[in-house]
Image: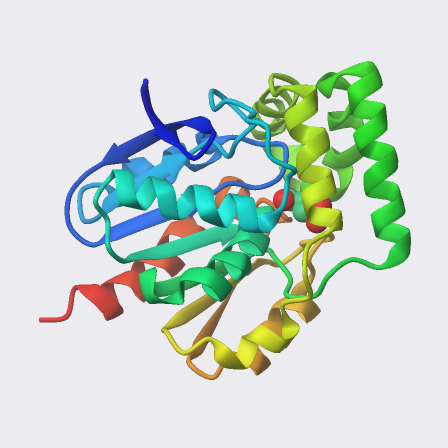
Length: 267
Ligand code: MLT
């Protein structure tokens, strides 16, 4: 296992392959393992980096008050440590929220963007309240309380029917995380900025990806990002819910490969 000291934490990461750097940012309550299939698929052509956010997987929790800006600072620290000047950043869901924060602070470190199953807007008051309640619940009862509360919304019905192994993989990723890491990330999401005004500032090539049956960040959110980002493309991942890279890895990988190859493997 590779670990690197960044700011006040140690981040656990994978760094596979060579070429144009492609960094994947994981979703809330999951870990870098959600990207293992993408590491296998893309590392023959690209330098692929995945890592656990602070407080998740094998990364330490640190002391800082959680925020998307802290995540963005950790990402730039990781890039500095690995001597990566610019990269394509692919953020899914919470990874996408962090991508917006990263773009605000460090757009000069971005070669292109992939925004997967995410949204630009901030939370409603009601969603914020639910997040604080969920943070307290997880602190009290542990991470294992979370899967039954979220999986029905995160995964498409067809994933439950046809891919019980994916359901189990996601369940165990969540349950093996530290409760405090999950609680802090809920707070960071609740307090995140509205990124809608940033959309017109995004000038780099951008791919927007959404699961056809994403119930958390639905098609309408992806379409709004597409409308706001001038230099953007759009792909729907058929049959997938919110975790589109896990639920239909073939379509997800093809969509990203098409975008990456067009931008970085030009003859
Ligand atoms: C995620 O998948 O990162 C979360 O579902 C995002 C959210 O709760 O808004």
